[in-house]
Structures are given as structure tokens and as C-alpha cells.
Image 1: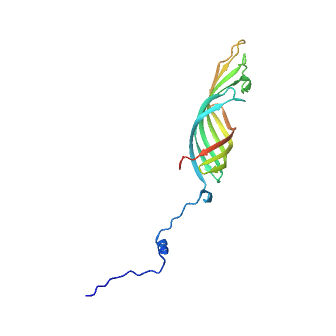
Image 2: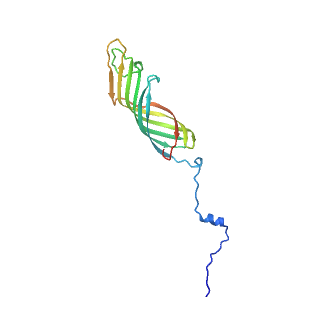
Length: 196
């Protein structure tokens, strides 16, 4: 009997070309500078101290502020942010800094006013990135805020002498300042992870 052995057909192509032909192609990710920009949205939650003063920082009060924001990245370095924050604003100031819209006349003008205001701050800001390297960035922001005054409590301090005047004044949901506050800021960002 004769045994028949089937031999594989030999290829004349170089071995490295065959290996390259058989392996699936792997696309290497482009460096950040070469990737095409895609507009995107980001959501933020924030909280922190809120320091307030009138005309100067001499009689400041420290409150708190917390809120949420939505940022639309329209260009590689340009974005716009809108949000809402609840703030507790505390401060003291000389009575001469007040210009109340009222016909009431104090028997004796107070010397100082201590304020405790609860506010909804609704900002609309434009952001520009000045410098960015890897996971670090420095930018500027500017815009306007609307202040919705939820509650205002004012306590009056008097010097000795004169006729007694009111010690407290409070209102709720009375005043609305639409786009009445200017926002200016410098920010530093560091990316800690994919979403943080």
C-alpha cells in the first residue's frame, strides 16, 4: 500500500507580511492636540463658604452657598455656564450705605445694620481657558447673576442717646434683582479622573 500525505501549499510571501496580513488593525488613540473638538455638556454640583461685605471687606460675614450648574463647551477654549445656587449671605455695614425705598423716617438713625439674607443666585457666565496642560487648566469667567431674595432680616444697632428706633426689619420674597449682579472670576481646574 502507498500512504498519501497532504502537504500545505507553501507561500512565497515573507513571514512578516503574512503576520501583518492576519493580525487585526489596531488604531492608536490620537494625542489630545490632534483630536477633533466635539461640543459637550457637563453637570456640576458645588458648595462652599460665601463671604460678603459692603464697599470693603472690613465688616464681612461668612455664610454658605450650594448649588448646581450646567456648562456647554461650544469651542475648545470657550464655554457658557448657567445654574442656580442657594446662598446664606451675612454682613454688617454702616447705616449710611442703605438707600431704602420707603417714606419711613427713623427717630434716630442706626449706626450699624446686621444683615442675614437668604438668596437664590442664578448665574449666566462665559468661561475662557487661558492655559491648559494635561489635566490642569486656568481660566477666566465673567457674566451676570439674578438675585431672588427669599428672606431678608436686618437688625439695627444704635449709639447711646436719641429716641429709640426699630430693632429689626424682615421681609420675604419681596425683592428681585434680574441680571443685577456682575460676576468676575479666576478658576483653576484639575481633572482627577474620567468624570471628576
